[in-house]
Amino acid sequence: MYETRSARVCRERALVLHAVGIPYEILELDGMRVLAVGYHVADEAREQLSLYEKENRGWPPVLSEMPRVSNGVIGAMCFATMLLILHWMTNAEAFGLDWYVEGRVDGRLMRQGEWWRAITALMLHADAPHLAGNMVIGAVFGLFLGQLVGQGLGWSLILAGGALGNIANVLLQHPSHRAVGASTAVFAALGTLTAYTWMHRRDARFHAAFRIAPLISGAVLLAYLGTGDVRTDIVAHLTGFGCGMAGGIIVARLPASWRRSGRRQLTIGLAAVLACAAAWLLALT
View 1 (cartoon, rainbow, N blue to C red):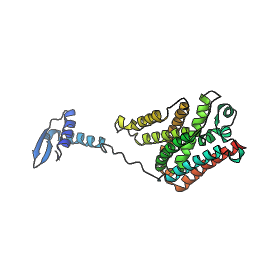
View 2 (cartoon, rainbow, N blue to C red):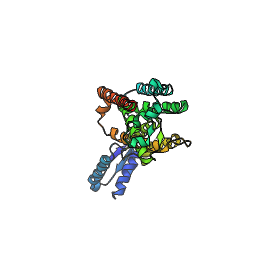
View 3 (cartoon, helix red, strand yellow):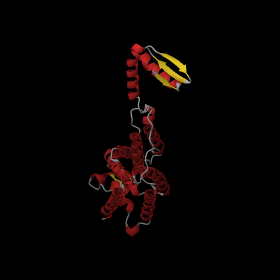
View 4 (cartoon, rainbow, N blue to C red):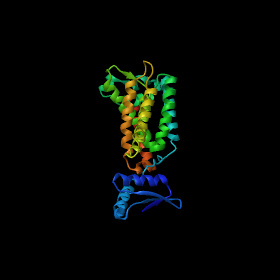
């Protein structure tokens, strides 16, 4: 009734018949495995095997490679260059301004309406090691995200996640809280990557451990990179990561055309640049 060269495939079909109580016999003829049943149950056996084939079509599932829409290099280089320039201008007190005072996270002033500090603080750093750590890790995460979702969309998500993370952090902290650094945006990038990759594996046919692997990896990196000495703003890292995850889930649900459209990527990227410029304009005037 059913024949195949694979002993494993034949045994699987035999188990189907066994489960529904249809007697069978496995024969070997000319290198083929033949699953034989009585004439009086042949039609029922064919129906059960047909149902089995339909239920298991496409099994085991194959995880397709996540498509790349760009190389991500330009965005990462722009990010690193911007942080370097802002750090130099801050230390040189360019234009006679105290960039730290005007741009840092300040809980009291932000609660009074100076929410642009949520963006400007992302571009300020206390010292060279602080700058180097955020610049390198942020560029790496941004590079990967830019490859997956496009550079304009990717860096806009990083900026939005970092800014929203700073706002959430201010609302959770005491009004006297002050901070600078791109780390909130860095962990927003990690959160976006984590959620976007997890959404790519959400097919219920995959093993549960395989589906949640991105979440575990993201949590491990958050714990490893997001904790440190007493100067580390752990709450900001958590809020940035959480806001980034929300962004990753949203962008994973967008049509593929959003990621593949060069014009849309450019428009969204320029919007992020203008948001940074507008934030500094408000801060310095």
